Length: 372
Image 1 (cartoon, rainbow, N blue to C red):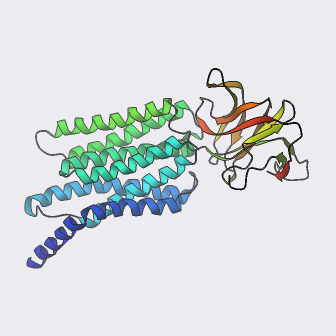
Image 2 (cartoon, rainbow, N blue to C red; image 1 turned 180 degrees about the vertical axis):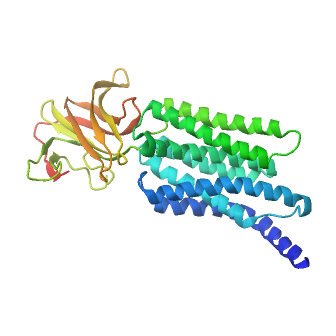
Image 3 (cartoon, rainbow, N blue to C red; image 1 turned 90 degrees about the horizontal axis):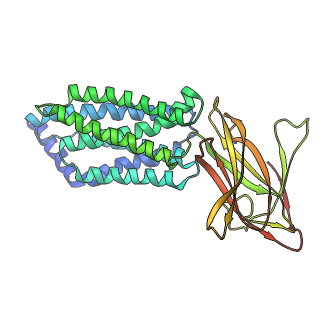
């Protein structure tokens, strides 16, 4: 018995000394681990990791609170250090994996959203000290990560489609899952006369997260996962090679970007002698079995009005499964000025875009050629 008390005292002293570092280490380790292993959204291995994180994190939230509640009566100094570290590892792993998968949809807002979420977890773990405050905070983080995962998994594995109705159905599924989880929390964790009030408070916070994500979706801040842009560029010509070449292989002519502009495949300047045709080529990844229409929206910047104005919008269907993405292209007659080609879903959610400036020159530009 004396040995147990001594062991607990040393553990508590260790925790109190390094608490901040251990909590941050758990989140950071999980974050870095999944940044390395994060793969395509229909990867069985990656989804097995994510489902394991969700299952372990949910079980630990309940187990830690039940165990801590009982230990508080006999050993108030008790702290399950390793289990808390594992919970933080799962949260960090989920957040980083979602950051990668959402970030591939080509919007800076999505990446910012998850960096803010990770920072919020660090701050929350720093300032929320009571058991109930930690429980409430962990449930909110858990539901946020659950919902972000389901927004990817449900279109990929259940409906094989994207769109507003799929997003709304995903929200309903997430609410059913979290309702069961909250029922378990109510039965096993929440105690006392105010347990119903505590349940209502946690439910209100979950509802807030749900409504927030719906608002972000309809404001088109959340990208149209699991779709992601693999390649995009503006070309002077695009020619499909005839049979017997297998698959759709294209030869394209284009202006090379400057050597230091490594993030673009084609130049941001499009040179013409007279208004002429430009080709917007894109490759969009979709999980196996998913089919959906993709739209190219051509826009020109109106210098007088100070805004982008649509020239035209056209669509083509894509089907998922190709590692390099489903390829398609559209063309438009362009003249001098700023232009861009947006790649988006049917409801206007942006997958990615390329922006370029058309310059009229007296001599034809020097063109390079490559296969796509």
